[in-house]
Image 1 (cartoon, rainbow, N blue to C red):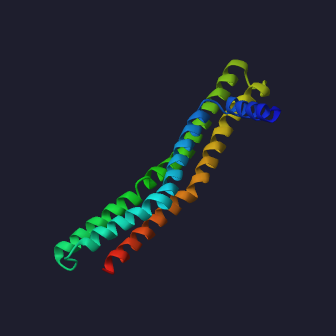
Image 2: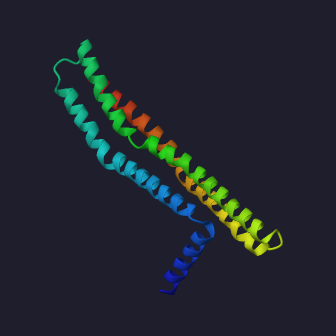
Length: 174
């Protein structure tokens, strides 16, 4: 129980030192990871059933060679591609937003430093250190959070392309 209390105190002091911008970084990071987890779930659970459904629709068609049949095939592949890429742009956008939120924290922290300097002069290093801390912690947090998701943004984009090509191949054989 003491371990949980110590962890809570450490996290609380980290957020107090980093300023209010850290809450924004935390929120955006949670949303980004929700999208990442959803994409894992989609490709693992939903996508195989979607491929089977598209294959059944295509196999049920009598005409698979005409111009109209090729357009139906293109539409089926397009629907699969659209769903496979559904949250990938959002993940990539949030990855880009996180460092910017960190920079916002840098600016607000530096404003705190300049406020201390304006009120107390440059002689009180202890008061200025709080602003410097509030300037560096959000920057680091935004960068670390973005780095935690950057691999998955590229991974899901590549996975979606690869799976759509696989669906095209599956429908081409019939």
